[in-house]
Length: 529
Image (cartoon, rainbow, N blue to C red; front, side):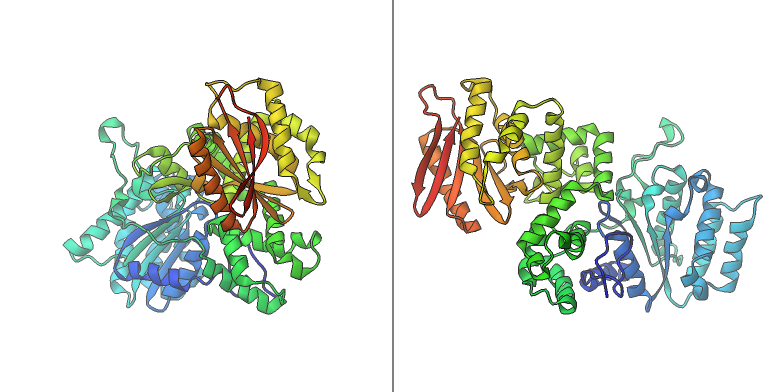
């Protein structure tokens, strides 16, 4: 029986996975056109799985030299000669290539791999590689995975320069070289900047500037996820609605491959310890349980993301500004922080604005930032934690009561609102109050389309029930009525008839507390601080 896989390469015969045929066809078009390019995506975004499938997909028409630079130690990048020796060892030890390497080429590569003094240089290696390209009946495609292990080495830039020279010479000097070269990793090699031979000799751009842009979407679509679930359903007969489940998983993950597979893997295994009935497990409730588990675990993906934030505090500050302060950033491919946040998988370009890539990342980041406030002994977190037992009635969250107690807590701590108050303060304090109440039982996320400095919609999933709370600063009666209509329309979208608003009001004559406001066929509870 197949399983879901979140470690290393997904193999169609062993694992449930999304059909990659359409993606492989698009990549093959680039290969057929003779393009050199980089597949640079965040960690655990399916790069190695795609490359493994691509090698098999190209086998009929091309000889594919597929290498993994993780197989070269740091010593192998110390000098040009050490790199040539390590590179040749990777090639001749590749069992899948044995039948495709001509004897004289194998002899030369073996000599470079074994000789100790003098060792071969890059120029000699590329003469041999070009000879192979010239005598081969099939064109050669070079694929290198995990190039990040090499990007801080001068020898790697020299290697790219040789590839660039061959790329140019095949048109200008009729030299036969690789049909296509594909580099895969997190780093966008095209924009590497070298720091070599002192300032006078430094180069502004990587030699990889001949590479074509790789714009193929590698996220998993709802249709693709449905196909994977259909296969699982034919084996296990859960009775799930595969289309609905695929849409829900896509909503949480934005198609991030690791997160998609991890939700399914947990539904298949760990969630069963809480929801034994397989028919009840493959539902929205099961997905919510799986998401809670993901948010609580210290998996390799989150370790990588946290490591980036610790090493790059400016990125952490930018992400905090987006989430906590509601800062809207226009997409700018020349802005370093935005480029890095995208490269590492934190954000994406959505209608020319910067948006956190998916709900799971967003909630994980909120939890990180709020935890930092908890460590400062936040009064709001403590008060929410102390009162949490009174807010659940018959398995449902009493949001009205939460708002009432939050208002009381706020006034006890701060008294009347002051003009220096910012919307981010209210958002952060309310989330700190809410977090211990739903922690371990429910999830929350911020609706990205409404996250700005005027309005924020918090969506709570608690034991299969959703509640929506709009947070905003009071901007007058007309604006408030507009907000009431907006949240009413939003409730329609979620199929709810009751919603909540929390307003921070500076008017001296305001009336604080909670009131019921009918809006059409909807009921709103409006809380005013």
